[in-house]
Length: 463
Ligand code: 4AD
Ligand code: MG
Image (cartoon, rainbow, N blue to C red; front, side, top):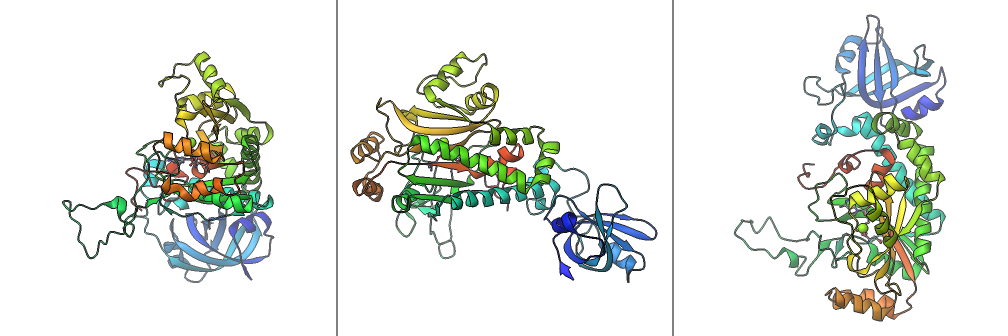
């Protein structure tokens, strides 16, 4: 007898096979002589139908406990299912209920719940069809990320969560403090210098692992990070989180062109992998969430991304027959409505915009010969807007120092970063992919808070 996952049974289980499964009741249907219980263990969208005959010992008592949400272990033999829509079902010979779930209070009812409501029960929503599919697809995306880079010989490097510097220079950092809440009761009147409270020094939650990834790339060639990052921007939108996961490859001896090529190959690889690994979940999203999900995936895999410069993008936006809320003018940053216009309305596919004005991008991006633009690139996705941000890095010490001075940065704080240009500098490039935006793009889910198990965003920290 083997304990099996329901996905494997539904796919390959044969009549007369004896199996044991463990999971949670989705629904129960009682007839006179027997009952049908739909069991789900998270391994698949579909449930395993369990048939319990009234000759099972303690039949009535067992059945009473098998309400939606109850946990159980059931053993029996598989039989070909006479019902439509399923190949196989399980005839129970032994049922053990681990924990019942009172139908009067269990928040997940058979009806469809709104995502807003499900956010208030983030501890139970993984048991729903939609979130089951979201988190399986999220897992497949993670596996694809590692597989893509490992196949290409990239080293996975772990960069710190607690950081001393602001990589993006946008001032959107959460301070870290070792303030001792136990021994020094905090009152509102008490003044605490949170910004200097990491054992007497300043520390923040990292906004990006890029600078540390650059350190590693200048020893190992090609590396990538995959970890949580934090932004203290008070953005209450469907695309922003205060805590999100980022994947940041960094390549030595690589320029902007190579960076764009990698970003495109990377996105194509992940979409292909997920379509192969999670076909039922992707079908579900296409049917229930967004009718364009599968077509979008095929579009990503089979078509070349559009590539334009920022200057070209501005010209296209100025010509657009669409009225934008935010102004379009060379030198101003693209707003999400502009990004979406380009990727969604104009090109109808991911669009890589490069060579942005120096004034709107971070200090570390390589200055072009025109001295007006930097070798930046953003990948814009239909429905999402910016999904990837990256650049070729400024590898020339004198130029980098000039840029830092112009931005009023403290060069001493980043002495180690400057050392990389002092000793064995090379052209190098990298990018950051927002992992939740990728999962949103993949699944068609409208709100970023619904693609991460425990969303952290303004007014969202109950769990
Ligand atoms: O464009 P960003 O700020 O770039 C960086 O952090 C660079 N250091 C990356 C690099 O070159 N290594 O962020 C990268 C991506 C964005 O394109 C977006 O997908 C995502 O991170 N992102 C967010 N996702 C969710 N919530 C937020 N508040 C996000 N801010 C950025
Ligand atoms: Mg960006």
